[in-house]
Each structure stands twice: as C-alpha cells, then as structure tokens.
Length: 474
Ligand SMILES: Nc1ncnc2c1ncn2[C@@H]1O[C@H](COP(=O)(O)OP(=O)(O)OP(=O)(O)O)[C@@H](O)[C@H]1O
Ligand SMILES: [Zn+2]
Image (cartoon, rainbow, N blue to C red; front, side, top):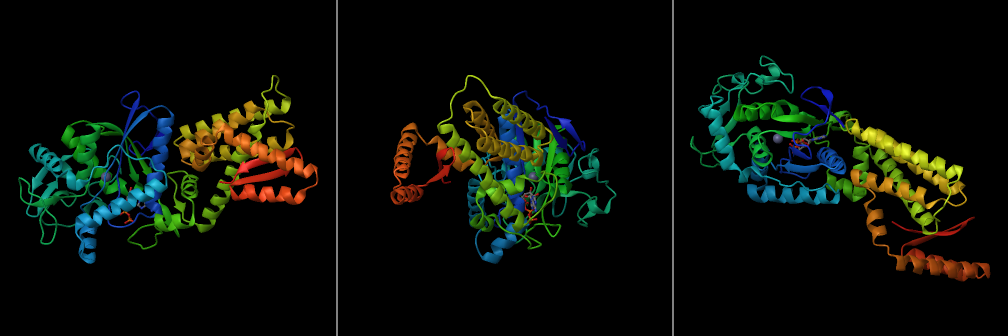
C-alpha cells in the first residue's frame, strides 16, 4: 500500500512502526460553530483511511483533539454572552451529531485542551530546560532557530516573509511562536510556574499526541492549510522535546472543499454547514460526493453534482436489490455456462482493480469506477442470463459489502437485509405466488390491490418476462 507523504513529497510504501498496529492523530475542530462541508471532507477522508486500514487488518489507534481554548472561541463567547465551557460543549455535541449521522467512526480518545493543561505545562517546562524555549514579557516562545530542521515539512525558509507573520518586540526572532500566553483581562487562564496564562495553539497537538500515541507514531493528518505553520511547529516542538526524529512517519493532508475556487471557510462566509446539507441529502450521498474526488485534489461544492451523486447511489442500491431478488431463487449450478464464467471473471478483475486503486494512495475515484463497472455488469447479467448462478450473485454481493464497509455506504441495505430472516422471505414469496395465481385467473383487480398493499409495507413487485420479483423499498 502506498501513501503520499507530505514530509518526503512522494508516494511511499506504507510500513507502520509496529507490524499490526497503526497509530494515527488527526487535528480536530476548533469548537465555536457548526462544522461545514469542508470540515466534513477532512474527517470523512480520514474515516475512509482508517476504515481501509482496518479492512487491511491493521488495528488502528485513532486520536483526535478538540481545540476548546482559542482566540475565536473567546471572541464568540463574549459576543454571545455565554461561558466558554457552554459554548464549546454545545459545538462538541453538534460535531458528534454530524459525525454520527455521517457514520464517521469514533476516535479512541478525543482529548480536549482544557483538560490537558498540566501535561502542556510539563511539556513546555522540558522545552525551556532543553534551551528550545524562553520566557518573555508576554509569554513563552519556541525559539525556532534553535531547531535545525525547521521547515522540513512545508519547505519554508526562516528568512521568508511568510514565517515573520506576527511582528512582536517580545520575541527574540520574528519566526518564534507562542507556547504559553500570559493572561489578559477577560481571558481564561491557568496557573503555571511562569505565571497565569493559557497555552498557544500548536503545543496542544504535540502534547496530546505524544501522551496518547507515544514519542513516535505512524500517521498525522489534517487539512492542507495546517501544513504551515501548525504542523511545522508541531514537528519542531515534538522533536525538540523527545530528541527523536522523525516524530511522525507519514503526514497526510486533505485538499479543500472550494466555492468558486476559494477555500470554503467560516471567515470567508462562503460555507454550507453539514446540518444544512444533511437536511437536503442523505448522509451517504454526502459521503459519496466527498469521496468521489481524490482526497488531495480540490473539490468544488456543487448542488448539481450532489444531485447526480444521489442518483448514482440510488442506481447502486437498485443493483443491490436486483441481486437480492435474483438470489431468492438462484440455483447452485454444477457447471458454469460461458456467460456465468465471463461475469465471474469480470467481477474478480474489478475487485482486484478496486484494491489496486485503494492501495495507490487511496485513489477513491478509480476505486469507485470499478464499483460502477460491477454494477452495470451485474445488471446486464441479470437481464440477459436465463438463470443467474448463485455463486456469481454472491460474489457481487460480497464485493458491494466490502465497498460499503470501506466507503461507509449501503448501510440501509446491509442493515435491513441482515434483519430479513427466512420466515419473512417465505411469507412474501407466498403472497407473491397467490397474486400470480390470481393473475392467471385474470383477477387483475385483486392482484393489483395486493401489489399496492405490499408497496405500503415496503415491498415492491416487478413483473418481468421471467416471472415476478420482489424488492424491499429502501
Ligand atoms: N474548506 C475546507 N476543506 C477541507 N478541509 C477543511 C476546510 N476548512 C477547514 N478544513 C479542515 O478542517 C479541520 C478543522 O478545522 P478548524 O476547526 O481549525 O477550522 P478552520 O480551518 O479554522 O475553518 P475555517 O477556515 O472555516 O475557519 C482542519 O483539519 C482544517 O484543515
Ligand atoms: Zn493540530
């Protein structure tokens, strides 16, 4: 399996530090507002990566933080006249609601900054003692020039303008960044050996990632806006603290959801919240929309494409129902006909291609092409073949199950068909047989009535030249 590593700027063979365990940290949201589609993309992409690694039999240890201390949070709480705690709890709850609807699997731990102040203080203390940090008038700073490998992730140079973003006379060097900010009136603060204050942004991720995943781990991710300065600074702090390098083996960054080619973001006010989108589209449509583009490419928000995705997903569900309907009376064959063999081989090929695409830096667009190819192939087979074989149908069903598990789709189908027991199937078959008898006796009005009654309880009948088939309406 190959992953594009922002650190080395190339695709690399994936080999975790431990053979079977993958340790992964993703920068979580700053909780002062509802999440938008851009945030959704980043978390759904990492959910896909996690699901794929699990599918490949890795045990994934997954940590994601909540930034619940931050300038934007402080501003918002003042503006709304609510406490920081109430505000952040409200948006953590809102975030979980969205993630649950979108079937984003939970992290093993969601550390909050406000609950790790002691760990952060201890971390900064070590940096001061090692000579990487210094105390100034308004806070404690990381001395960037002391860390020789600064810039290895983002390629920034210390004399570049970009690095000198905040001019501040209290710093030794314009590139230095705050680890601890001494208290200002009206801001939350905690005691520390150096005076009351609050942590800077970058230090939280270094501290909490090392606390829960150890001094070195496998994957660190986030949106590509985090490469500089956030992740560059995280590396500097962490490698200075542990004396070990590389701190993280693979850095993965997601592309932006864009609106008119600009990043969807709260500050540009060009965003659509997940809540709003989920009022209009099924969660699986949103997942598929976000995953049909490669995770590193930009993805333009488009209502038209969302509608197309909804139709595409419906077509796939329809294929699944066709498979289920055919399986009900498919026979085990002792000899495969030519067309059965061809379909069986085509399915196997596309399944292998699906894995190759996923193994090539999680190439979801290519993987999804295989899914649609299998769908057309199986629909053609069902229409053309006299009697599709059980083994071929089951192969297709298994393939779609794997796709569903990795992409987090087809939940309605696999959850409902798992609950479909034999007795239920026999009962529906019985009603269908009675209706067929009525049709043979030309009692069409009662036959139609039965069809309507079945529809009301969620079963759709289709009279085909090969007989009547029934499907669950999902
Ligand atoms: N438009 C976007 N597309 C993809 N990922 C995004 C987008 N906007 C934010 N992210 C990612 O979502 C995660 C959480 O972001 P965070 O809560 O820090 O918000 P943010 O970057 O301040 O958002 P905004 O720019 O809207 O204020 C980060 O990994 C960030 O890179
Ligand atoms: Zn972070």
